[in-house]
Image (cartoon, rainbow, N blue to C red):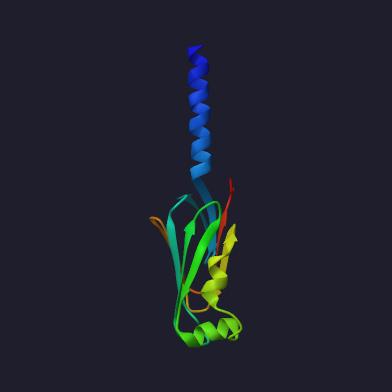
Length: 132
């Protein structure tokens, strides 16, 4: 009887860990690696738009997926991305994705929780392994 309780407790603990943990695979600059992310962590991506030469900051949180996006940049760069057809933050805030992919000739800085990555020039991808 006691063994069953320990087994049930272990199973509940494992399920709780799986529900809260968000392992992610990261590629960029010819390097690959893993990140252990957690629900509720906040992240940001920073880069310079190579056309407008203005900084862009994308903020998000880790939930079931990457979600709650917001974009901070100048009006000219926002217009470059949207052609003035829609409000960038309005559209971005409703997105929920399993992977984030970006390319920039000027470099990309990623920070999620205590993890930091820099890509000097090229592409960066962060992909969640599961979305329970």
